[in-house]
Amino acid sequence: MDNARPSPQKICLSIAEPGLAAALATARRSKGRADLVEIRLDLLDHPAVQPFVEGVEAPLLFTNRPSWEGGSWHGSEEERLALLVEAIESGAAYVDIELLAPAESRRQILAAAALAETKVIVSWHNFSDTPGDAVLADIFRRQLQSGADIGKMVTMAHDHTDCLRVLGLQLLAAQERFPLAAFCMGQAGKISRAATLELGGVLTYAAADRQSCTAPGQLTLAELHTIQELVR
Image: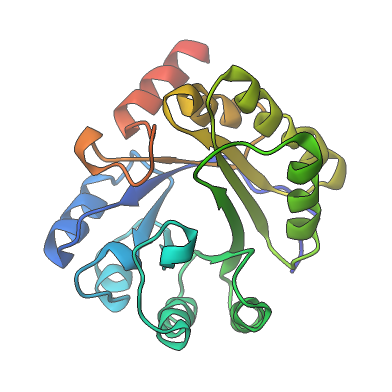
């Protein structure tokens, strides 16, 4: 993958509705308010790619998060990857594959994306805490070497120092010219979700409303836009 040029900063609406019709409606309502839309296949009652490719105008990011990475996918790895490959072959703008996924899984997704225009986000999440600087730097290096177009690092913050350490990863990203999305979850991490875009982060995630957050501390689209209006 070519990671020579950073990607433009984006707000991604993450869709949490389990019903296909409701998920499609939410995605369509985001037109003009979100730069891209994340379809959480693992949260859908009946995971499907084509209805979103055919029915949503915004660029799409497909994620199929396994239970071992905090998601809701409990099926086989083969079925999980098949949906992501289908998304790539259908013209998805992005797909997400976990750094801790089996090496063969990542190779399969990267190989499929190399034949298309889809960019690959290699993600890593810690839902309990924020590790120290050495661990974070190691994860960053592994993402840098993974073949990803974009790295995604998200941790649970318990105080402001956790946010500072994660946001500080943008210094490494700038040195390596590697597009990185890095922010924190939880109440203490809320500020990092908005600040990351002002500090070099290429991507942050938002919910349609407070009832449909896909991660602790996630801001809504309206809240993110309000913050951006205040600081710009």
